[in-house]
Length: 586
Image 1 (cartoon, helix red, strand yellow):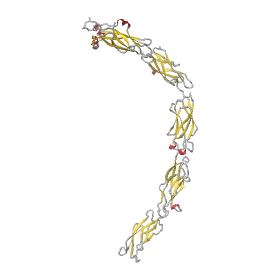
Image 2: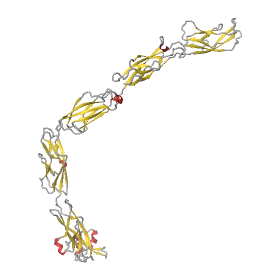
Image 3: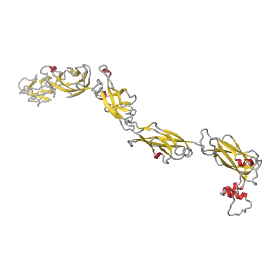
């Protein structure tokens, strides 16, 4: 029986390589037996001598291409071509030789490891494979070694794991490393085949460096006209780290101008930007000294103990003089003047000075856009505001003007100030009825009955409020049909003085009421109340008044209506009325 032959791969001889011999027990050596070979490579890769049964390989074989071949053999009678026995199967197995070098799965490798890592930190693992037979000898047993990259890195010979060989490697000193790793078969022995790969290792940044100012003293200049919020200085500290680890914060630790400045970080450039909080004034203070501190925004606690985490620098800011416009001694002015003041009266004065060291004289003027009627003027030299026209509080109680101050030496430099002038009240208006009053009296009325309540108004505004006094006009008080009773509350009642009135005898009464105020100088006026005589029911409800009240809706004038009622001798058919009859309450 046979079932397996062995053949060495990569045969380099000139003759066909002998594999083995097949033999049948029925073969008596008389040439009556013929051997037949079928299966993988039969007749091409493998041939058999049909007489002797010797098998040869015709070509050089590669185990890595095909590790074994399955063939079948039988012995047949040469004359009858019948099998002498059953067909047998056998295998030709290719024996391995070390003809393949190890190959890495990648070439090159790229990786990174944090800087300042401790000794033995794992960087990565490389892997090499060998196509030779791992079950036969050491042809596929790979050992790793480092050809380039000492003394910084090492590699485990069995696993290919690369580790740091030095502690605390600094990215800021050297960032990139090229490591060459060799993989050798035959367990690294002499005569083994080898392959190499390149590993590019980058040290990634950690926050192990504090920010530092390149200089200890910075000097900047800013004009005194700089607005609050504007930038007056920019400084930048440096940090050997990169990215997020290089972000920094600035702050003011001391300043001889309290609350004068702010500082912030420009996140795009990591610069410290100093801005104004209050205006600068060259005449008041010509320079400022600030102490600025910078620190990491994202410190790493692991490295806080190794070095100072902050740095400081001094900033000196020089204030530059600027020719400034005049400055008023107030932000606004409020003045008062009585409404009866004469033209030329001084209302008040404004004052402005040149803040610069030159102390230029100042000239004053009125902004005529705020005083179109030219009611006021200002003395150009001393700033006195005076009247050009008379005033009337009831017409305009306030005047809002602007005064301009101009530097005499530089007329382009001007300042404006609002001046609000309040016109004070003077009792120059007499009180009058609060409304037009007209009432009626019943013919059957009784004496001392109130037929109307009147009130008054006054354009003046006394400080203590209005107090009005009511009375009947003196010239009619002795023969009056009505009387006026002052209610002492700025109202008055109109009362009857008779027990009855006759509509036919007299249809209308005009009651003169005198109203005076309590201010100085006292003002008074006479106001007329119209009273009509009407027919009423027992409850005092009006039923019928004179013809004048009825015809009033027709649109005739009051004089024409009175002529119809009072002049009975005139004909009712007339084309023109002319009567100048007027009745007063006598």
